[in-house]
Image 1 (cartoon, rainbow, N blue to C red):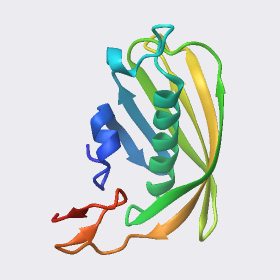
Image 2: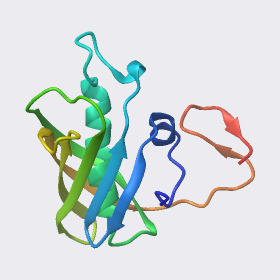
Image 3: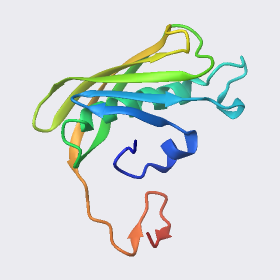
Image 4: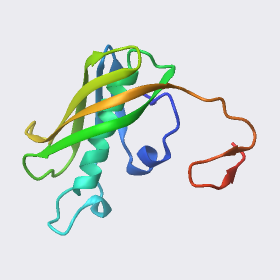
Length: 142
């Protein structure tokens, strides 16, 4: 299953989309050693990215043509994240322009490791042409 858009960082991390419908999302993540921290568990930044993407996907699942941008996110870490992880997101409420979401990361034993709430703004996707400027200020030729 595809995310519906190309997200290079998500591809780099190896996230696998499992559910993308009706205000729900599920993303699997099999962390590699380079995703760890000095305590040999998954780095908090990788966990926050999984939570952010799970919430964004849940928000987009009701209108897959729209994009979303993160407005705010609050994360609570409950226990170390180890092994294969599953991020499950949920759209709790939406308006014409905003999505209010939450997501939880579960380890392979089904234990909750981290939880987040987030607010996203719906944005129309801009058309991309043969020569578009990417966010890193380099010219790309899609």
